[in-house]
Length: 477
Image (cartoon, rainbow, N blue to C red; front, side):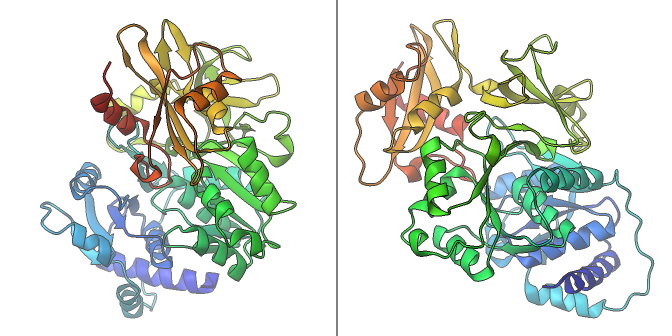
């Protein structure tokens, strides 16, 4: 689609929505795989002044219904595959088929402009995106038009996007990374976005070759699948210059494999959270050797502090909670003032993540505060242990957590998935980790698990809360 097509068709869709009763401030759900139709629906809703509620189609029907009730959705755009999942669920809003034919009919019926444009203010709500629920029930994060705009600027400026870019968007659009940090910045710049309905390594490689893509985002788990795919070594990567990664550990040997596959590649390793817009920090390729274990430095138009438990500011090198402030930070959890108040200290967003910042501003992530392991009176940060184990050439995925123990309180436990055709024992993993870790940090147990058995979200990120629950039921104290 050209930008002229996109503008004209979303104008018509917005008129159709308004005449169907969609009003400024209404919450309208979108439940569908990524597509140009998803994008058009989102933009048309923005033009009406309504708030798009992006719904995760991998959630259970009951949870989806609960989310829609929580934000009081008045209508739901849903594709055919997802609509079947909702059969028999009571209390759902009016549903509209999210399909090319339905949207085309709406556009044709309202192609003529005969009404005033709806005024939309920067502070008006633009989108509600639900937290992943990795540490509890999902909450609806309300982001305003201004929040989205400043996140766009932060991403585009810091990671060198331009109007000549072609990006591959291969993760679900109900997630803040795909929507806010890759799709919208490229649309803002007038660049090209290639939307894939579902990620497969072969499909990603094909899209890069066919569309001459210049950049794309994958979590490390997806990057591994691409690099290890048989097509990777023979594909034409000549156009691809920037690979964005985040939402997982990217160890040095896997980073080196990406760079060996694509000479001259720049890897941009990013950290963020939905409540922050989401982008907070980025490790630029030229900074990697300066701070290889870090998540980089703060993006423009954003501030970051490390806070002690008493909310005073930590010294450089001192572990504390990451707190973020800036115009991209959320308006709040939709109609949950008490929950919103819990995550703000004054006007600083408390991320729930622990880390340190050095004198140069590089931030090293240690752990989710709820995932920190307390063993024998000492604190163990799971990501430090995960980094050490992830360096083992046989390890494909690793998650480290604390399991209850009568003697130590919690015992450091590593859950490991091996690469195909690789073999390692519990003793191998423990001895390997001990090279880089203190005795109290080194796992006392290693549990091997098949990749498909790991509980993961739609980005392939391991859900530690669910994994911990699984293992507590199976593992004796």
